[in-house]
Length: 400
Image (tube, rainbow, N blue to C red; front, side):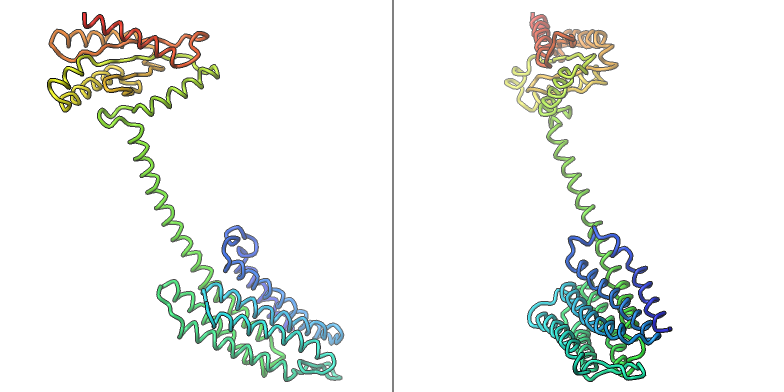
């Protein structure tokens, strides 16, 4: 009965330690090595079930069923070795002659077991049960176990001694595979002379625990670090995009919104008008007087300062409204909410400031303001044109 209990314990340990591998597959679907690791674990589960049944059937001396179960046992064992080697080859990135050697030797083992199991029905080369129902190992069975021991020894020597391991990640991977191979090799070697003990199941249990501890957890740590790097890179890209967006939507000279931002705002307002969502909106258009004279007579550097001072004056009055520079000396402010309610007072305050500037030979800026008229203005352009027309009226008034 202890035989069955060990298999049951090993099965439970495997399911508990690798529950995420079996039930959370999304992370593994795009990782070839992880998929092969899961396939290997399926083979281990099947082996535990087969070996557990073997212990129970042997206990009750049901020779007909135990013979069939023993045949399945050997085939499942060889399939598990094949899947384990496939996983190791992919996980370690083994290439060249040694890769072909490992895969072909595993295929030879599986083929030999299948042929030996079929022949065993006529010649007991793998195993047989005597008249008392006692299990006896055949020469072919012992050779198959020795074959596995030699194969695991070669793989362990390769991973621990001969393989080139340039990085810390590669060293950890080779160490995990090498140690698990040595553990499995040790118990399989003992199993050759002790066929009635579940040593092969113990080798799988310890080997899988090592793989879980050193391989899967290390892979997750690497995945976490890669994710942190990716997030940091994404953050940098976001900041670069934010900077580019700010450059594109900000006028470099004055710091107010650019002509591109103005064009997008026009589109948004047109959509609101089309949907009937627009309630209260006013547009103020500004044009700086005498900029051409300043540029021609005092230079463009003075002209740029002239523009910045003009923008500052507009923003100081229309503090709660977005201001756009839409041309060399042209600005637009879009008034909503509180500024919309105070639009007449704001325009009056602005014009009073301009009148004081005129008397002191300061900045002179023409302004025109108008409101959105529901059921009449079907686009932002119509509102702008009225405001622009009033601005030009004011410009002529200031010049006269």
